[in-house]
Length: 405
Image (cartoon, rainbow, N blue to C red; front, top):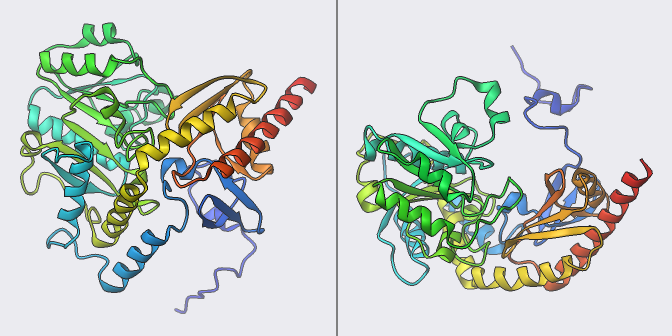
């Protein structure tokens, strides 16, 4: 039997061969350079989303490209039955950044392929370390992943319903509500699992001191504190990790998105005492921590350090906020560093997204009345100004349509 390799030979839309887990795409991007993306028609777009906080160094960063190219020509994969020369180095650098970039934090790292897998590792580690105290408390409005366990940790009931029954051992509390958390703390709770800023829920920043009080409560009840830094970590919010801004010491930290600047990689860091609960065979991943992904991660981390990423994010974030305040129709601006939500004066954010795309700007409607902005940390002040102009126009055009309707 001969098989034709001419995949362009029929009239069926290629995308019909994909599971319909996503809405039809408005644009197909084929190339990216720095802060810009280009579609299959040659149109240029200013990227204010970074693949949802992934391409933190912009598209086609030379240091990362060179590292990947060199590594794939030498060795891309050997499995975790054998060692590779990059795993320990990358883990040590992550541990240093967990310590604020000044001292080693003294933890250990498991490498995975995504944020969901990093969080799955964290949940399994809680169960192994805490034994019968397996209940995890997370927050309403949170997002921790799409595996069955991380989906239940995610505080969005509408995402739960199609996949019931979900695994036991998860309860939810209102975010930024210490008193509600206090009521649910008991001898069965193994961990509290929080994002330091809720990204998908509209970039919700908790009150100053909330995370510190949560940490104290965990210590009082001998529960673990897990901080999901998948979207907030690696400099985006003005600190290497957002929890550092609150001067807390979590037991477990999960990282992904920006870690590979587009290469699929995530990791779960834990204090050595907690990490020691895992023994050989307890957890694993075929592709987790393979040389190709680690080459991207190590180059990304080196580049972020050279860039002084937290300082840059903080400075550029202030510029972005000041420009956004000049836009008519903006009710509020939330966030830290270059993780920003723009709240508008009505539920037409999806129209703003569409108008922005038509005018060459990539943003995300994260709520009916809020737009999420996560430009690369390498973006320039001039590019910020241009992006805000395009967003201003998009809000005006979208608002006009709402008024006419």
